[in-house]
Length: 220
Image 1 (cartoon, one colour):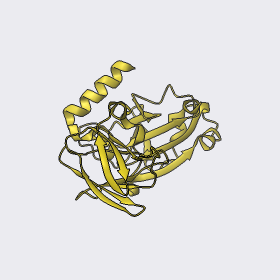
Image 2 (image 1 turned 135 degrees about the vertical axis):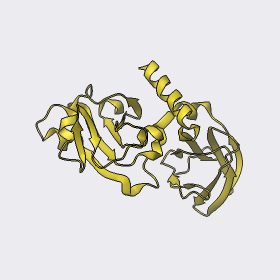
Image 3 (image 1 turned 120 degrees about the horizontal axis):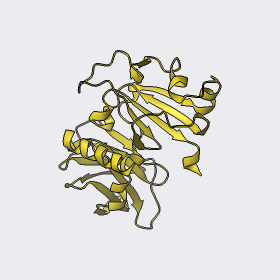
Image 4 (image 1 turned 120 degrees about the vertical axis):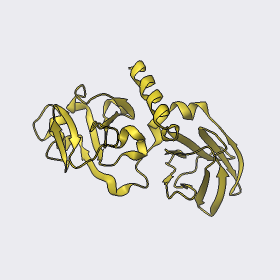
């Protein structure tokens, strides 16, 4: 598994370094985390919001990009400055400190959620709904419940997608970790499944679509 993750990360870097995850954390000087802050990549239209723990995630962030932080009487800009992640400390609605964090870098896709590509999301399906189909195989349980999803030559694909890399293979993420297929996922352990028809926010590997699986066991 470790080897697969290493190869996946290497492939992303080779196909376009900008596609790697860029994670951040915003907190007050007191240590309190700041949620619901809009974090926008200036002049791109891409944005996300911090969660209740002050965390945010983006992709396609360039070394010379500028982030715009807005919310709660806050409106400031901060240069990425070549960092691969960013811990931001606020004081009196001004930025008092920024630094790169190895811990945030290692989180990978952990903080990335749907952002600017909201029209590409087909919606989330609960594990309970999938189990009601009576089908024990997760991949086949998804068929008929996701518009455009089909099984071709034993692989899931989204009909109508034109491949940009001579492949129609979807990107599978189980609890934010890339995997080769969903065949090993026990449908009884599925909390929810979300399908993106256009998953380019996850890099080149996601261009043909992305299936995100959240498991019940991961929360324990």
